Length: 298
Ligand SMILES: Cc1ncc(COP(=O)(O)O)c(C=O)c1O
Image (cartoon, rainbow, N blue to C red):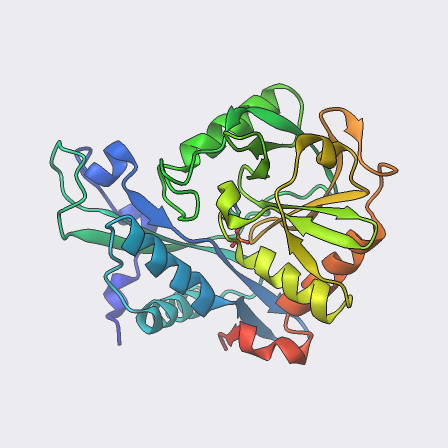
């Protein structure tokens, strides 16, 4: 379906410094992962269709229409993994951005470039993390919509991450303008209170994460509990029994300290542990009841 010469070494690419997507952050991205299953000698791409559906949604909302269908994007991704003979866990980054070299930051020009690349580095190797509540506020839904994966929106995340790192934390959590807990700089947030698993609603300026949705399935199907979408206050964070972050890159990451306050007993909590274990099995293709989530590469 696609010319082999469209798959190139990224060092051979060039882009004008006038490119509007680059100058103003007029683009949108996705973040997908594929997991290597050693026993089955198979690479499983996790929820590929769902990621490309969200990609198309971002493109539509931001006037950056993606110039390929979901089926075409899936096939390009599979070919990219095949050509690179990937036999390990890998992160896949689709990027679509404005192609014109004109000064005005309008979104009318029909030329949108698409690129998809691979990254083999591990995102956050620590088994648990300590985070702070950022002094930066999450961008509002009527500003740079956080429900899309816009490239411009990651400046908000970048400022929060930098501040956190300079102050000795592993990561940052955002509050909304109203003061509700929103999400992590690049991940969704959950708290556990007794047997209650709670996460902020989409209206609290979050990206509706695909991992977040997978956690909802795990909580219901594997733990027999239910996930509640409900606004969370800052104090509810500090007083939670367990807190964890979720995202494609980070997986399920326990948070054991927030703003120098220990969460629970400062160890990875039992419910977080169960969710983490089920998630790791699901993404690696070890739970057949989730078969609709996988795309096999080989
Ligand atoms: C701001 C933000 N929130 C949440 C997420 C988690 O989304 P997902 O689980 O789909 O990776 C991401 C990941 O890209 C993100 O950047």
